Image (cartoon, rainbow, N blue to C red):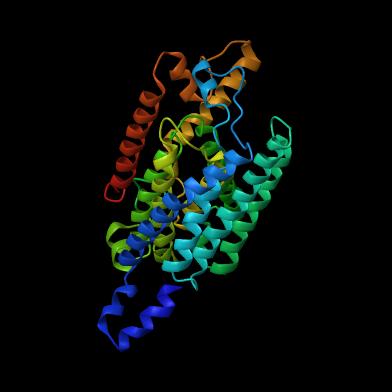
Length: 360
């Protein structure tokens, strides 16, 4: 919005020329999102406490979590607000990819909000797993469909980039639709499973979107993309601003979500952020590398699937408790230790993923 309002004024004064640069607008998207999060969070926390909207703790979970009962939840509303407003302010709102990312965030956020609200109404597990999956698949299909409509007959839409291989870009054809849907839905659920400790999910989310800031900027810059041998997508450059807004919103929320947390993001936050991350991976044509960037999320999701399958097959457990972070808690790791070490792993994986830009 500011881009369209203020950049045309560069004809009268060169100072307004800065609004032309994505780097400038991305930096201020971070700052704007951070300020919104820091200002909004105390008000939301107070509002949630006044209405007794708090976290419910699993009876079979770690005993150290019982003290968290009643902590305000559904703080994802803060994150969504803090990323949507700066995106609308600083990004080119005529860019179609920006709207796809926003639609993905809001759709998956709405699903998470419905789930949280259902739990507050007294249904312990929220909406059923089948209904939740149906909603998520529908949302993902809509997001992928928007990409198809935007790109028309561009053959690049159905191709997939393979890390470490410059010229290996298989074309999945129609199979790309279920593949892209799997990326988005899988990411949404993986982030949701990771959100079990104070600040555990928002840290890797911050790192992942910071990584995609770089991937979107380079992939949307013709010369950089050609030099690095990565897919060039013209619409992608403005998605840098969206990713930057998520980075700022994550930092603002982390201020209140770090151990001991004053507020939790709830399903409305984790599902929205996961859906947004999956959508960005699809839009940037960096779907496969998401497995590395979001390695912590992948490990958490796999730990649950492996635990369930192994228990059904043998009656025994692979982990002391799933998701994976609870396993380490049962091993005696203090909660802050689990959180920070998972963050460290996320940083290492992000650096590894960025190294694939040259290791081709």
